[in-house]
Image 1 (tube, rainbow, N blue to C red):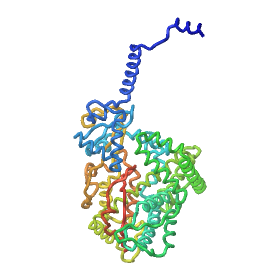
Image 2 (image 1 turned 180 degrees about the vertical axis):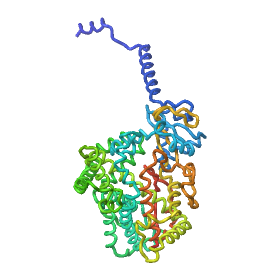
Image 3 (image 1 turned 30 degrees about the vertical axis):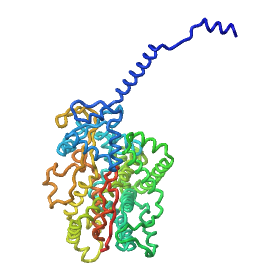
Image 4 (image 1 turned 180 degrees about the horizontal axis):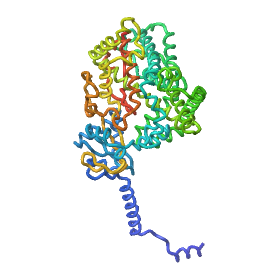
Length: 552
């Protein structure tokens, strides 16, 4: 022990000098500082931005989340920021290490980008493509313009033709809408003048409509609810006349629950600061969502195989012939599969009806169509709040659909489609505008461009705001062909990127709103149940929606 002690006194003990500690601290400080600088947003020169946001790694992210927490949606933050910066063009910082996004709060410039500046300047958003890649990677909606996009779109283009909409889609939409009407007639009887919530009813009805029109058969979600309520006697105890009445809810069919789960997750992902990662993990790691996606795939594959059997030996059909279409086509799937078989024969290739492309394109109807009920919700809310508009609309329906009125019948889908209903068209357009259904359009710059005098680099996401209108007043009857493009606003996609699904969606709204106004008077409801506060999501929805129905 003595020897070891002596040895310890002879060997030097390593020590850290204050100088070395100082150098080490300085090194880590500099490295940390450089990392922070690398993570900080890099503004595009010349375009206004919020100075404090440029000094935060999260940029505008946490402020947007705080706005959502307070107001229920994120996009109002952007319109507020436009006022704060007093600029029609500005930039926001959304993702660490990502490029800034440019926001346009000028309708004329937005319309110019959407209607006139072709895919050489702007194309579909890379961000939207990343969002959809986890659920429907082969859906053409998010693809850049090119041969791949054209070939995908070609498969479904016939489902937007006037013949298909009037002969196939219209009658299916009418049948499913009548299921919702029958449910509401039962609810109106049980409610005895009390208001009730309609968001879930319309959501289920819209899904049933789009599912039936796409697949050719019902999920049964509306039937289950109607059967449950029809079996009930009158309620013994009813709430006050101005209080909401709550009805029991039937168990939803598995395929409906699967579709809603997939769609709701997409809604949640968009509100995340890291939406692409959120959706990838959700769809691939959450067991219930994996099961929902598998059920979706099995159901679509099964129906595709049935369609192939129906059309495999039919080689001489003329789809442009409405009688042929009425005879053979019952759904969008029939049209898509028949076209794939026809194209394969002409091109001398083996048909691929079970390809990921066809499955994603068919499921896309459910994704897009599920949001149509949002338009109907806003329309009914506005018609309830504006009784004079509702009265005028009903009068127009009675005049233009006089034969149905005189015979006491319900107008058919063909009558509603063929009728000239300019005031109904105006009401729907005004509901789109005031409801701000689509709060932004988004594009990616394909090369260095100039917007409002500012240089915008290649591959920059450009958001064009639609929010702002606050007065509901359907316009006078004006021929759409006589209106300037800017007067139509930027509520819907225009120009090269005009949504071909718009005709489908607006036909669904036209049929359902016509039937509701024909069958019911929407009475005024208490202020506590009439809030116009929005709920965030892919589409700008009302947080609450109630009706007090008076059956006609």
